Image (cartoon, rainbow, N blue to C red; front, side, top):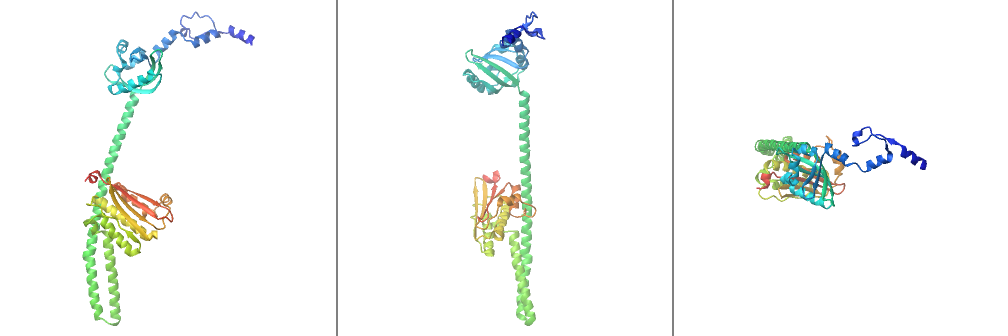
Length: 398
């Protein structure tokens, strides 16, 4: 071990850059001497590092006055050293950032270092630059050793991105508003056409069929034998046609929906479904005043009718109940049955062209008016379908 120690003391190291060692006599230096210089750098070396660093470096007191700033600091902010040292650094901070800066100084005075603290400093030209600070306090000395990075361009880029997001959101909202308005016009146009066709079926076709039935009954009374049998058959066909026409008229347009409102119209659908299927339906109560916008009312009526028909066709239920509520500007139509139920998760995942026009296609009708459909069902436990529709602001506040 002693042999190696002796060799170590005789090893000479020469700096490739004698300027790194000020006042160097260019004499060989032992490894021990080099280690001592590394452990305790000379003051003039630290001074050179402070002055030549491209980073913004400064030393300040907990009294909020700068003690020293390096050239990069002055260059970045455009102030001279006397200007910076002559007053509290709080005076350079943007008014909106002064309270948070003073709070940070208070934490530093207790020995808590600052990591990634942001504030704005006034440039000599009157503008403000965003600075990102990392500061280490020396509580015993009452000093703060800090580095700062100018992040103004990043902040400006963030602000441009935020503005772009806001503009995009506004544009999206405006497009959605236009789409909903267009959908409403299409729904109203479709409903008007339905009413026109229903009125034509009732007033023209229905009345003609009824007149033909009455004439056939008279003819039936005057005939005998095969002629009478034929007249009876014709009358029965006409009666079936009349029933079908009335049913089609009801399906096309519900006069109750126009005259009374959504709740009453759905009550009529429930009564009809109960007569057809034997399922005991509990109808929804009507909302006071008919507060739902016309286009939404038509869509909700169609959706509710389809949900009721799904119960009749597929549920095997004994009872079903509907509820219609309006709370805080949101309409909820709930249709629930005690039938066989189904695996709603699997059905939704496996939705295809074949299955997409049934229960799960209803949300596609609700989407353009801002509504949605929620379904809860498991095999053997019945089904609950909830239609949720937020009223437009102007409608919700009336």
